[in-house]
Length: 316
Image (cartoon, rainbow, N blue to C red):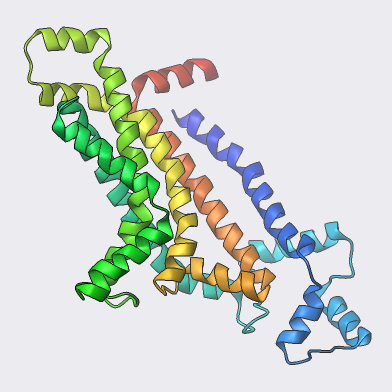
């Protein structure tokens, strides 16, 4: 197991380097001259070619791309992600200031996704082909048919405008996160329910489950204590994939509910062509996604002895 963990950690190195190259390429291949954009932000809307050339030299944009990347990567290792073209603040500081809110939103949406998937997926199998199963399937189809921004607007209309039960923006209390969390977790919860149900039904058809059923055990006990532990690894693996999707989906949700997280920061950077801010966002989200996938992979190995033993034998 220890050797497997080290190999997985070593495999992350080229992936993280690849993420850094993609982030760097955003600033190089994006339309517009960063020097001219920076001058425009400082109030010079018609800079002269000499002024542009001077800023390009100061920013190192007149050097070969390999040299530019090397210098940018050295700064990255020191925690320097550059300076925002929009407000002149360090990008790293701005991202760190906004990151806790996004993690709080993504974390709450992910926990709701896990709970909904396991609870309703298990309930659907316990009452397979009965009315609870049909009702859960209907709920899943409805959640998957609603685009996220439509659901957000519907929740705002019903819970905020008509009933005044919840605030539409702000971050002061937990109530401010109810609608964003429900919106962000809706589609992923539906997929988690469907996957849990399918994985459990597949497990229920295996010989050991048929033998346990023949002993007269209650169906809830069969599903919850016998089938669920063996059905969890594929469910956990997919949920890990969707955590990255949840983090990416926060871009739209934060904009709708006016939450000052890194998602809304990325939207602002896109509209203002603030490439250092975009580079920082890609680095943060890409690294977070890779680390989450590593944790999910290790958790799947720990939960499933067959995977652990298979991995050990293949490495030996």
